[in-house]
Image (cartoon, rainbow, N blue to C red):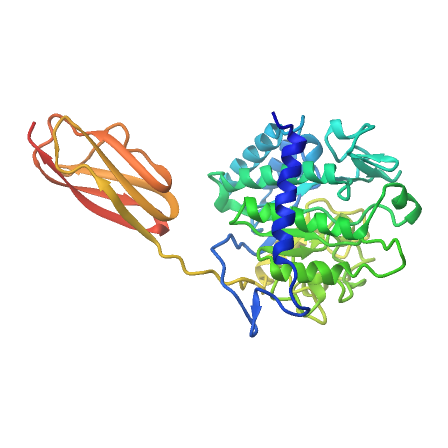
Length: 466
């Protein structure tokens, strides 16, 4: 039997080969940028707007946020899911799935959207990786560290440049993204967000002792985004691009340009920053503030608790314009996240101020970075049992494009049949089977299949006497 680590490694290798096969392009060119136009892609969820960042991951805290009247004007919430507690043993993601399912249900009940933040970094002194990766010796150890880099500052970060750790992480990301993709609440998911890229230290001696390589680290980050978009083809993926690419040889890593160019080649990927600081604006080496990438990738900055402070901003207006204005003054954000918790201050504004200002400050950047390929929406009959005698079994099979949730009505003598088997079903090819009642009168009776935006199919079934 193949072990979870071997399976995960195989997953990463396949993704690496796929990304490498598409990577080499001439400088300045892009598969998705031709004559100034972005190529259309299949439909994807696109819910720009304001989101609330949660920094306390208990179910009670999440419910408090969703029930707070101040949250009502927000488009949705951004909740965190930690690798260390989602994967209790190698390949067992049941804990993560259960938390996701509970949150999706409560978010949907409030009519909100959710940004799912997948975390392989911790800031509270606890571990960022599953327990089995924390001790050695083993191939998941790099230099002096096993599973994660810890810096003595309460920060721990998964060793993404270690192939075994990265394989396990990539497998978890794939599983979580696929679970979202298969959820009945997929329409409520605004996207996947990854934690900031900063390492927790810039000390090259410490990094050398962990066998850190900035280019391998960058490749791992790209592979993780690719894993998420592959497993969840309707979702966008954002990474908080914020430092972490420390040079080990004195030469610039040029990470902002490398990852920005990679995003141009890989639709549904984008960047953000975990700390929006108008008084310390980003330089053009950040993808969100570079005209080469603005409008072609989504940007999603966040105001964390300390970022309400007068030390980094003078007002909500200043933060809003820095987040949403185009270059050279802003980040051209489509998603704007605010921490529910606010720092001790003195602060330039409060969470209540944000809530009260949303109506007067709509997010201007709502145009999709990638236009959607028009999809033929159709519900087509594959087969129908007709004619059929009263008392016998009948069935209907339909093709649905795009796949959808469908209802069926079979109407005899103006009455909708309650026969077993005529319930709601989802999919791209759906079959209903039921028994025609023995007392059903002969005739040609309506059969109506409704599949939401995919369309409606109206047929007639001929019933013969017993």
